[in-house]
Length: 303
Image (cartoon, rainbow, N blue to C red; front, side):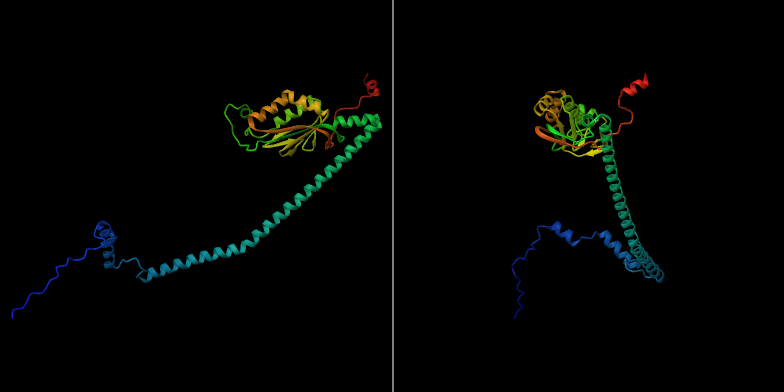
């Protein structure tokens, strides 16, 4: 009986799911370039693989390097642990020294204030003894050596809400040395004070600092100094005088218009109000070094 040939299936071989992505499949199957593979094979054949050193000398050198690195790290950690308490101690000593010096400075400032009060009291007593109490009180008010109170105005000047450095090149405040057009400067406060004096103010103070004929308004960086004492905004200016008249005359004066221009152009804030009673302290110290009281004896002695 003849042998029948094997039966072959007529069904087609199943297609790979990634048959349409032959490029990506090739990249994944051969991720390492053939050149790199050949170089790695040559190194393995020559015994130059990247593993541990084969010779005893190379192994000893590697071990010595590791020991040296560990020694350096250990010594550095030990030194850091030893010096840490020393640094902390020096820092604490410096802090204690600063605290002591600050306390001494505060004590000296307190003594200076007491001595100034004593000098002022002695000056008032000398004025009363030489010219009568009425004249002494008047001189004390005019010189700023005596605290005063009475009707007047309250003027509050403050920086702009968003004061920022810089400005236009042609800005007059910028060309005058003002690095920030939104901040109140010493020149602005000088004009405000001079305007109040010219409008009839009898006594003026800024943030509690009484102004006298010897007072100076200067700048140190961004700070305004009144008699070498720094002030911070807002700047509260109190002036004794006829409240309604003083307020209207100041606002109509060139200095009042200057302040209004600062409000309009640079967003500097300013408010003025009349007060029924404002209180101004005495000036810290009023020292006369050159002037002498005028008397008939002095006139006869010089003739």
